[in-house]
Length: 262
Ligand SMILES: C[S@@+](CC[C@H](N)C(=O)[O-])C[C@H]1O[C@@H](n2cnc3c(N)ncnc32)[C@H](O)[C@@H]1O
Image (cartoon, rainbow, N blue to C red; front, side):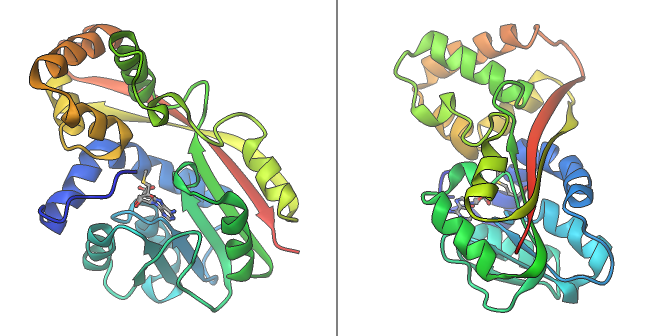
């Protein structure tokens, strides 16, 4: 995910995220928390928390004192702290997790595709998980993904053969990728599944406005385009989504992997 401009207010950045990806990550959170075995009585760490979609679900199940979180983007750290008083939210990445105490469950929802060093992330997750504890992560599925990002990618590539790599690739999104990553790191009882959600839009303008926030690779690409090419992309995306003319819903499928620390 692109770093967020420091010129924007933290509240605006969190609202922009909610409008773009939060629409999907909020309904994904309870499904993913179930998959990660988040039950009352345990302590959980949410890595790459963003403004707190999954963190909110963890707090709902465990209470704020039993939840910690981190994210490398300062506006998201502030937004998550403001939204969830009592949660220990720290600046920091998955490659260098800013906690030392071991947690029962460590989660990373829609984060692994952005990390620079997956092997290092795995050893950091092991370091902050108690023996027998669970590490769970999810990313958008490579072939299904979100209908939004699929339609966007097709529209962008049809208009621009040099569109950046991050629009084409959904890292860790192929069947078996997450299980392999967990097995390579030495986790036991590794399982992988898919989780399906959907997001609603008031109309196509609602969707387009969420891209104009510049959030995520698709949004960042959109706002960098000159205005005339942006309008061409808008029309192509509208076509690819079946020319919706009122409220509509888009589906998304995430791939989730879980393992137990030896
Ligand atoms: C798609 S958002 C997911 C946010 C949140 N987990 C959710 O489900 O809404 C991706 C998040 O990963 C964070 N991120 C990017 N690179 C990261 C890294 N190397 N380590 C940890 N988090 C990272 C971003 O700042 C952003 O908050």
